[in-house]
Image (cartoon, rainbow, N blue to C red; front, side, top):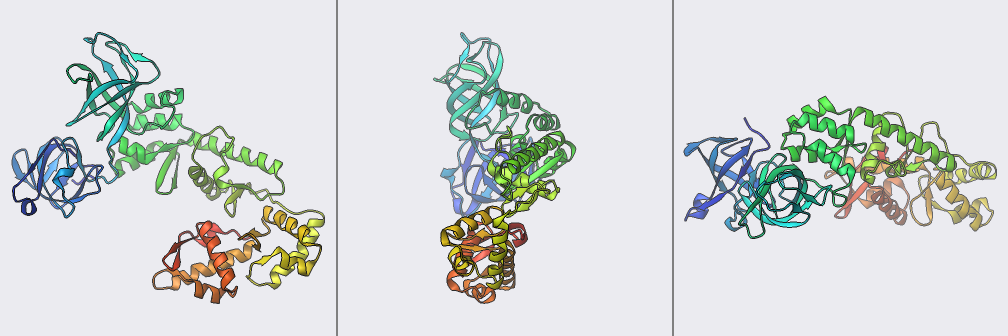
Length: 473
């Protein structure tokens, strides 16, 4: 049966004299999964796509190789280069399997050692068929005592392939004496804070051998969720295996930019409550604004996550009806920002100017010439109107109402959909919208900034639906 996580350790490379005819043969032990003749494979860490021409398993010609078997695999491909493949590298069908330059592990020092293992000790690391030098960074302590087991980070001079649970040994700097050995825990250590209490707690959870128990513990531990792609790679799971675990353990999965982050049910409720409280405070302090940038909803909440993930969380809360969207911001459904007093009366006059101008964006100067009151006063008013969402500033001087902006987006979307190559061009948009060439360029550049469109040659491709990007008021 085909497995997307086939991995083989390359511990010997044999090349026939007729290289271009017979291809390259790599030998090793199949670590996981299976492979059949005709499959496409790659070498972890190299941009090289190869095809399996033939397989010898357990010294006999075969159509397939499986986990635990000793195999010789004949490879072919236009990108094939013998000198690029070295002992210890991985042949794999998983495109996201990459060698790592550091990993966290549990490490045991042998009883025969004369002294404890100190932080940043230089060592030789042997893992599978790979060998490299590096250093041991002890975690949570300055050293690991003789005959004791502790947490450590292996910082390598050369990247190697590995997954959770792999066994390794370390030898002294001269490679003459074995110091100890251990088991790989996590392939994705943080850039900073490797010995912080929260990181050590994470390692205690992820060192659990059982995948379901490990994921459950991590979900309970992390208010900012668990990266499922990293978890799958770390545990060497197939997509189907990961989905089964997620269905059993996770309460919510958020997707953003090709990444999936899972949350425990209780943690998701905690996060939702934190966001609602954050917006209540924001609306109270900023009553004349429509809402808060969706990537800032976690600011000050005590829950640390990237701005991109925060925006994705906001999107999920909008879907759930917990929040309402205003452009690229979000608000509580009960909140409405509005102008009051003299500003409310002035808006009635300004709104009429917009209605009389069709879809064309207009400047504060144009509005002032009709409404009066002075340009400085009108500039300040348009800034306030923009803040409460009555208008959108699309350039330094031009404004448009949200309803008109959405209609312009709909026009762009429709024109692109009706073109042969799904590309929006300047001239058709100018003609359909009737706004003139100069303003057309300003509008399209605004679309680019809002990630509604993306430049492609002489035109633009729609990358998000207009209804998602532009909210009419």
